[in-house]
Image (tube, rainbow, N blue to C red; front, side, top):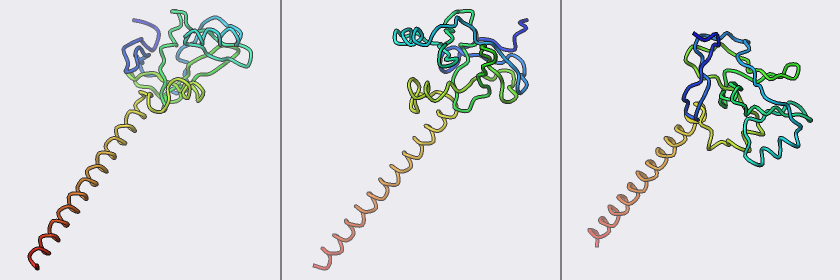
Length: 168
């Protein structure tokens, strides 16, 4: 059995990290590894479609595209169970609450990444999926209320017309 508390598995958004045993709060789960490159080089790579870039500071970015970087499989969530932590130039994924075995390990990628690549409509995390489902349900209810009101209005108009014909 693996000494790591996680495995790579199929998630809604592709591949993801899943806990294989309970992980306690404030535990460093995995290190995000890769070569350190200047930000201008990273920007050129991103423009060519490179992913898994992690900005360390104003000068350097970590290119985590290597297959050895298992941390790149931790997916985005708007209500994550972990966070990224930069410690002495290294990036770690650290739990912010207790994670049960079988739970997907997620963290928030940051506002800039979220706005540029994911967005409110494309986010597939549980929170956003439930929010969109509630919005669809509310929209259907509003539409049904409008249809009932329109049908009642048409029926009232028919009754009024019928009363006028009877009087005449």
